[in-house]
Image (tube, rainbow, N blue to C red; front, side, top):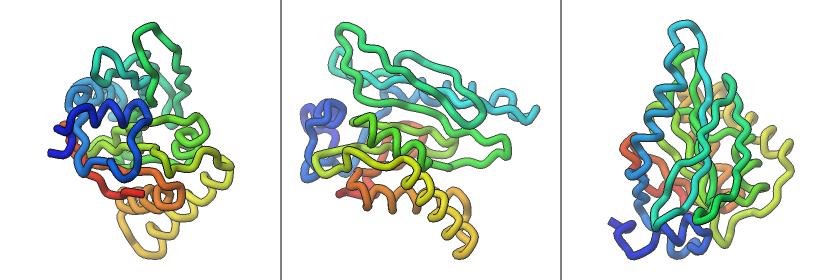
Length: 203
């Protein structure tokens, strides 16, 4: 598997991986259990029509990726405020995407893309109940974007795929993600809840 190459995950997390060196597979299995636990917390009151986003800060520490500073958000938003701690390198963020309607597989939003680009995250991870997706910024990625523009474009794309082309909502969300990754040269990985992910778009 491509991630068996020495230090490849470290170079990705530290923002040192070029587009040419992005692996075909990404192994985040060491944080999968914690991501799944936060997803279960997100939907534990869904029978009452209540869901809650949970998030965490991704850090590189002791030669591995870790989730820290777990934060509870609201039904459809979360505000993460990464704090630097000695011995840790902040590399990005993680959050869940629960929906009280029970929708699964809804990946990154336009707001997520704007945040990833404008705060210069190396890695961003979302858990959508049925799959895990990852954005990986690299040497080709956009470094600044108008947040309103990218949010509007994301919404237009989802409506286009979902309404006009009759693609299921989760797949419309996925296609929108890939389109925005192509525009902003961000690598996109997606895979199962065990944290073993496959490259779907490479800049």
